[in-house]
Image (tube, rainbow, N blue to C red; front, side):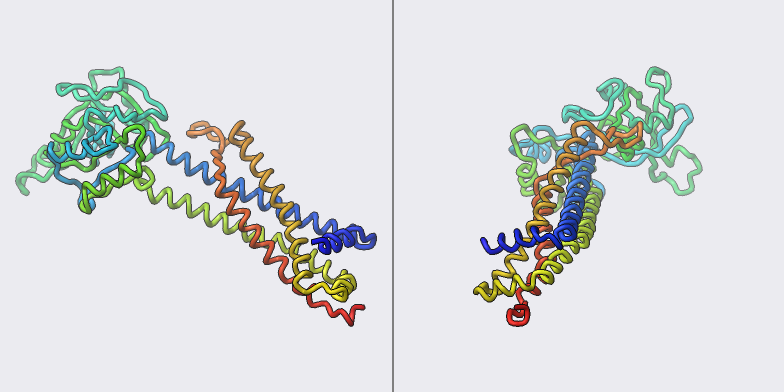
Length: 409
């Protein structure tokens, strides 16, 4: 240890090579710092985007969703539904019938998705995020009402204050006779009173969905006791994962029980894969930047051959010489990595707190780029830096250890 500090101090005090080697070492340290800072910032942005996606969907999706493992729908009965409600951790069970339908309002038409829900749907704290305008009920048995996605309402030019114009729903059906020419034989129709808009900032929902009472959609689609899904709200104090396991054990292999991430597994997986590939790409760039460490240590080994030969003549083993150069490389990389981690943390904190970098989109869900720091990212970045440093320093360290004592002295 003392010998390593002796070599390092003598070298950096050298009047002839001090300036050039110092500049090269500082460039190496700056390169590592910039690369590390970029890794922290980019990975934190991806974490923020992933969190933003979860937050957007949380305003519409159930905490747990039960679907048939095969097929579009499944049969239910009161006894079976009651058995699910009694499972520990299940607070609310909402029945759902969902399908595509033709929407018509005052002559304006579009294909949308109608979602029939039982009365306790709004008890699951739906639409707690985003925006909501209008009445928070689904009407009565005599006058069923509809809650429209904002995009649906705008496209159909729905006026919530005009109670005289209903929203017409058309659903295709098989005709009684193949030879029938009566258009009414090819569809079922019914009307709803539009009473509210919702918007969660996701076009998949805002521009397509109409929320209606379960009985209305059941009768329109002729589903009877069939349901397309069941939505579960977990009781406070219970783990979603644990309740999901209990539901899977109770329902068996004929049903899928999906948490929030699994309901949008493709999108979440895409963000995570992008994050992984960006991490690998920036790590590769960081490895290229670390070549400055390789060059500075190689020059150190060349210029200090005589000093190394003296140390070896005094009894220093090759292992000690290698260790000296590895520590020198680690010192440069460690300094740069610490600076980069600190700067990256500060930039992300400023973005989280003050939103310095704006998205520049007035209609965006958030004003500034979302950022979320995860300490595991800092750990993986540090591990990557250790590997890169060892790789960059190993060759110069080996060259230094092979100095011929007799020849150099």
